Length: 168
Image 1 (tube, rainbow, N blue to C red):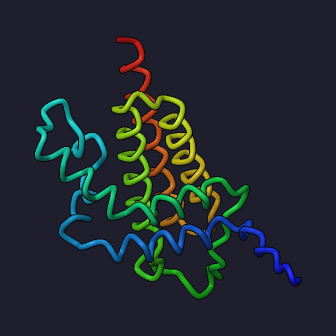
Image 2: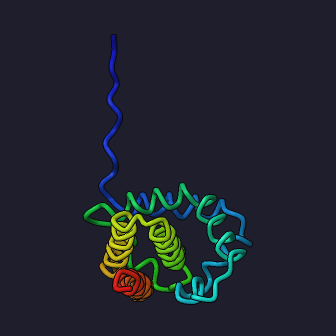
């Protein structure tokens, strides 16, 4: 009887992030449009049940992107393999803005877990978002570093949101 073990998970977080981006692009553009706003404008105290239903639908359709992004964030390093001599223009860095969108998606997932009383899961997701931001700030271009800063801001806002909820 032959037994073929599964290959180990790739340790380069960028591979998982690229997969997450591909999964995210498979989601209908109209549903992804929510991610164009900053996180503090996506979910507000005034969000009604229809808006929350929209967010939940986005989360369901993006579940594979969320899973891949979480796996990427749990890796020690993320190397997108860019040679800065070849990619001097931000427009040629197709992963920078989608990484910001993935961070917002993860944060929405964390907020959803919070709303279900799953505080530890939410905290783990928020910390993954911060690791994603750290991965991006360690890249070689300014556009990637700026995307990393935006991701970190999203992550810090989510942590702040959790702290406020827990204090009430």
